[in-house]
Length: 79
Picture 1 (tube, helix red, strand yellow):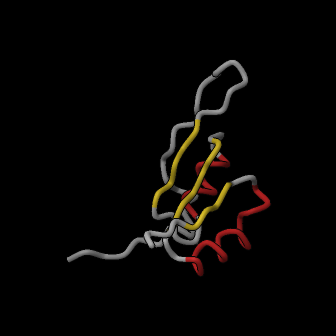
Picture 2 (cartoon, one colour):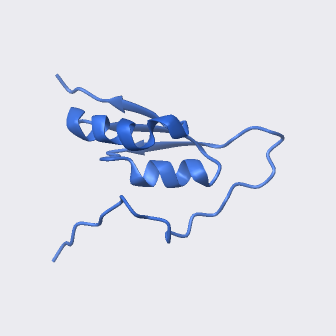
Picture 3 (cartoon, rainbow, N blue to C red):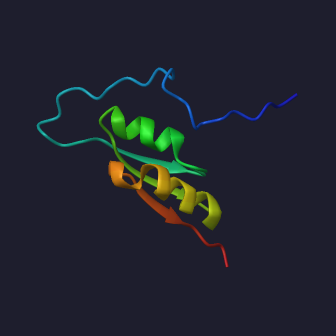
């Protein structure tokens, strides 16, 4: 049985911080980012993050919670 995982509080997820890269931040693309919890975690770990979701409501919540942290949140429309 599938259990939905909450990404809003992912501080315990083991993400390896990027090594010395000559001042360049590695990029991460978070597809289906929802409310942005994992995107914010990746950003705190040193990644430049672009986060995308099809739900305008989820992106609005993500921007409100983490937009000033430097994560780029975008709505993806299939129409």
